[in-house]
Picture 1 (tube, rainbow, N blue to C red):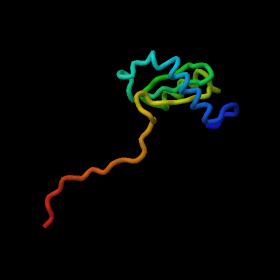
Picture 2: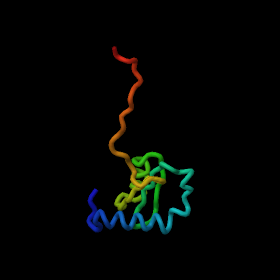
Picture 3: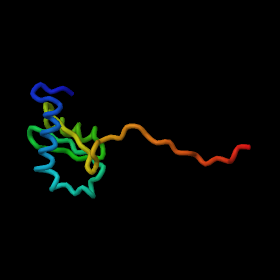
Picture 4: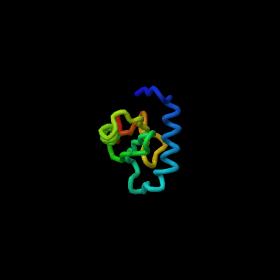
Length: 94
């Protein structure tokens, strides 16, 4: 979602700063690990939910022109790309 007043880097910088300075100390990270926090970088208001979409919808319902930054509590990135293969146990071929 492009913003006229902010570059993507500015949104990320401001969002991280607000989270670290104003919100992180209020959030019990152990209790909320894995939840998504969606933050309005202009007001500091935020929504917290297991679903990033639900949190985003509530933030936009409150302020439709909000400039939003999202993060996942307890993770460096909100999503994991890729996967891993599991080897199924099979009977020996012969």
